[in-house]
Image (cartoon, rainbow, N blue to C red; front, side):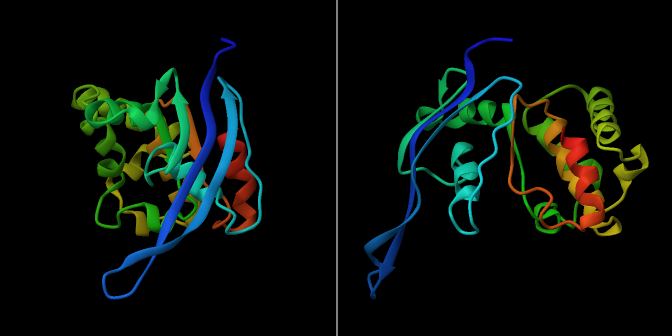
Length: 200
């Protein structure tokens, strides 16, 4: 295992402007994230703990640039994420995946599980149809879901099963880093332990 950290975050800032008046001019900013620094080594887990509304979700989204940071440095596998754009940024995002807190809101209800899992593989041009199907089945198997789930829709599953599908969506791309945004807080207590064991 390399001593080089896979992810380095230095003095990360993400501020959201407060706009008022007819011209919507900025009059201030909400400092959602202000000076956060940490490193994550390969094969390690880092937990960020804090009260509700303290910016944990914004840190996770900022790392993947789902929201644009306003300051600081994010280095993933030697690449400066904030200075990466276009196809190169898409390539980095394949290697960094996120699982959102709410499995009800993070899965498109109009897409089958097959379409949800295959979308990233198609976007990143990974494998032919047979290879993609094999990867999707493997990801579902890792999350304790049957391959028959591929042809069903998210509303046909329980909350815990939906979160397993969301985790499978992240795993199918074989990322090097997975950002987990409170992935069990929206689930019933009886299945939280199952999903935690799955993540481990």
